[in-house]
Length: 352
Length: 123
Image (cartoon, rainbow over all chains, first blue to last red; front, side, top):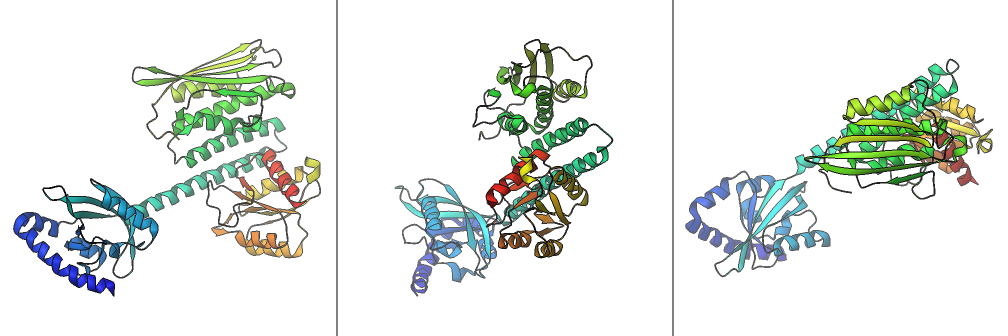
């Protein structure tokens, strides 16, 4: 009831104002009327921001005819009208001293909903008083749908990767059972699981980058690393984000180091020793360089292996060839020391 | 730890036969008695109706169908269960988020930890 009265009253004024526009700003009004960007002007001096101008694109987007829309408050376009949250967003956008933007769900005349970004700017007179607001809408429905679809595909890809790794694990274990020594089966299984954990972390981060600390937590957890409890590990270093390829290689490398430590090093013989992992970032010109040390102490006396096994080749080649890094394995009597130096792309994303 | 699992009857619901097969072997090594495996929801429901089950491992996605009806049937009989899944993140349906989840692929030691947790929950 109230709306109808406001409309007829508002509409009269609105028409007069558009007429005023036309005379003052002829070519601009034509441009506003015909642009493909949906837009409205609202009256700042009446409550509820009644619409005083709507262009053809906005009418096409919302399904209203001009007579039905002019004079109505801006709420008529919003799905959440009457809700405190939406009202808060709208007030904030319209009260802002300069342009602002809000993302809200909008409602078409037929009740259909769509997401839109609404860009609101105040229009002032010469004295600086806000007379009107100019609001343009960007329909985000398609964008949101594409985002949802992408999210779905990525989830599906992550899921399939993990299921495939589970199948590979099962095939390997079943194939090798009875034909290979149990520790061979275990070694294979461990490597597949390390790879799977790195994939899982990457999936969680949308394949952007994963933190070195998180990666270490995941890979070394089966070997007793526990952030909340005293463990045989100390881990220290600044926040570092690893790109996907680096993360996958590191996962395999740390898994090998830990496996080796459990067999022959600081974690062998009921784990009497300790593993200290520390790293620094050096800024060298444009690029960063990561220096990481894995140091084992307190284990049984160490001597270099008589033969290069798959594990040490994997550590050395993986880092050298895939990551353009240098790795040095020192079999010191007190324990193995592994030093890794490698270039690191500067991390451009948000720091979590 | 393992001895507590010995002789427990564990229902396996898993649609990928080779993964199910491997899981059966892991459970056998722990001394568990495998019930199933069931590859479909209706098969699992029949097994729950007819057999004695101490615990269950439940693949969330059975060839495109969510296995929540099986979870409900288990819950109705107070049989503790854990989901197994290759999915990551918070896509568990509301009402099931407190159930333990075993992320595939998993190491036999993770299976032991999960089953032990189910057992403790049961008591």
